[in-house]
Picture 1 (cartoon, one colour):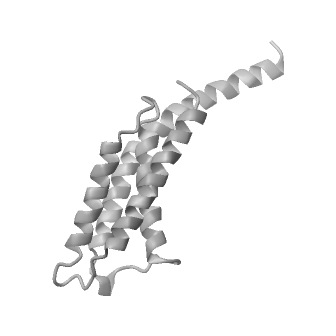
Picture 2: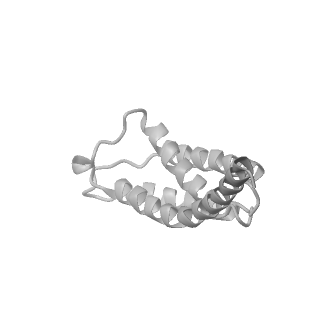
Length: 138
């Protein structure tokens, strides 16, 4: 065997392992990200860490885009994104927005935040479909 064919075989093996590990790590990463988003959403406004370097709506959209993309990566082996799961995430985001009206949190509820969350999830859905096209089959 030549060096080039051995190298190509090694690259193929590494790619297959990576392509199997990423979906396996995406599920715990999804739950960890959901936990962080939930905690930041319910943190009292006067002591909340300032993480937004851009518009609040972009932060909302980006957070839920990441959640949706992690959900898609976790589903990559079955090649199915269940829109109902994205719907549950959107319902959770709406519930978090409603909980922000609780006394003591000094936060405000915004329908535009829910819309930004839904936009992030929608973009992640289409991004997930694109991933299914380019991701190698296991």
